[in-house]
Amino acid sequence: MKFFFPDAHDLVDPSFNFDTEQRQFNGSRQLAQLYAHERLDRPPYDGMLISKAMVDGRGKSLRYSFTQVQKLKRLGAREFLRLDRPHFTRRMETMGDCGSFSYLTEPTPPFSVDEVIEFYLDAQFDYGISLDHVILGYDEKSKSISEAPEEWRGRFEITLQCAKEFFSKCQTRKVPFCPVGAAQGWSPQSYAVAVSELQKMGYHYIALGGMVPLKSREILACLEAVNEVRNPRTKLHLLGINRLEALDEFARMGVHSFDSTSALKKAFMDDKDNYHTKSRAYTAVRVPQVGENAALKKKILAGTVDHARARFLEKTCMDGLKALGQNNIGLTEVLGRLREYDILWRDGRDETERYRETLQDAPWRKCSCSICRDLGVHVVIFRGADRNRSRGFHNLHVLSENLREWTARNQPT
Ligand SMILES: [Zn+2]
Picture 1 (cartoon, helix red, strand yellow):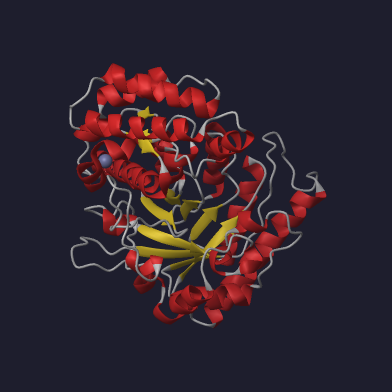
Picture 2 (cartoon, rainbow, N blue to C red):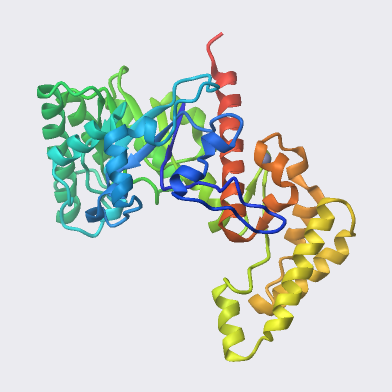
């Protein structure tokens, strides 16, 4: 099972000092900072995926500057993302897609098939996914394509037409990348029809899209239906899906790869599951920066919170956590300080028990990744991009370890 990590410029600054919170930033962030595959001892994924929407403003999730787009085109994705390192034991792969969630609300995709092919050629990807249009809706009981809402059928047709044009142009132009057909649907039956059509066009690798909002049970129902029509040679890719609990079933039904940012994003976007381990997730300890936190700034401006007191509590929390990391202070004392600051900035929401578990178990002490080794207690502090993203890198490490173990268990003997 291959894991592709979608690039969204998630880098950490190696010059950032976690104790003083100072950095020696110089020049381009993309050049000066490190990707997860550079920061961790071992790359935590098998390859990276770049969406056209990230490099083209019409997709509305532009992340690349003009200069970076030019550089990506000049160097290709491998060199741009620095995926070739002497100590890597396997060749990292690259995949391109259109980022169809970014133009979800548009009536038609903002790119043409030719533009997509040009992008894939410029970036020198190993795999390129055909242009698609997400169908936002799920109706498990829907048995007939013709009875579905017109909008769903329209997007279904656009996706298949683009796939047909894409495959034929890839053949004519003898492109060096492997064309991957995108399938969109709203039910097990519609996904099965899409896969069947894509196979007829000539695809051997098919990416199932639009499944991000679906429950694992619903994804499995779609895969069951797809499996009925799937040629044994056809490999499947799940776009944006990371459901480790279903890996066995995914593999049984032809899933060969997936991509997802969720391990990284949960580090700073989830309410409680921020720091992952093989057996469970822990809540990161929030110590917002007085000058940065929007809720706190508002309270200070409104005069309901005293600025100096907020600063004082922030500092005592950070000092307490650092001392705890060196076993120089009791846990109860630190939890008390955190509680006092919590009351000030988030109106009494009590996270003490969750924080107690995190700080008492100190899971970073048992983790072998370079982030936990170097950051210590800082990895569980929810504060600023460098800590939060570093914790996300740690989560990627845990995901990759889980996948390695799964692969070892499932390797044919
Ligand atoms: Zn770690």
